[in-house]
Length: 257
Image (tube, one colour):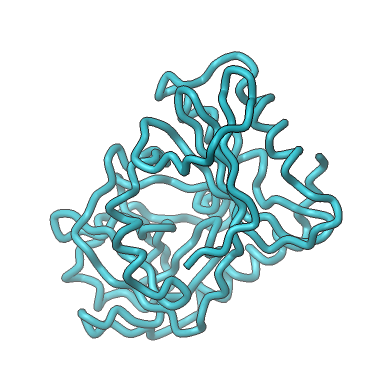
């Protein structure tokens, strides 16, 4: 169960605080960022806000001063004397902005993926239509499991992250019907090539590694998919991506409020 440091909602029109609403299944967009250290750092902060505003514009939810107000609400809720290892979620609908901070889960070394038949509504956006996924996540131990979302026997993404598949040291990613997260965009600029390919469940035995990447998990190597008897055969590309990622984490600038 998630442990929250804060949960707050504000009216967009005047930034007046109101009763907290997580906004799940509303018409809107959210983003989740990793906040860590003292003083606080927020990994890929500018990129997250840029993606959030771009999606809000497409959803026709962007208004003058919205980005400025989001910055303002983050600033007033960040404490200068707090040591963080939290996930900051910002969710926006037509009338509300909701902000929450929850403790970042510590993941176990043996991490499993469980496949389910599900595709998000308009999956190319980080929209708030997540209640079905959240119900499924509530039934598993998130420190050692994630859900692989599949449709037509193809794997698209996980419930919380993008997925990379490794075969003969080449990196593959699904073609479409998933949200391209900030961490995936980062790695597209850092590694030689990520090949777009439909990843069918029946072909998983061809892949040596399966790697989850995202703001909440960072870089995680999947050890098992038990129902398919798939087992990790290598960690070479995982170690490479982890090295790149941790260097960026180390060099992340301080968040200035």
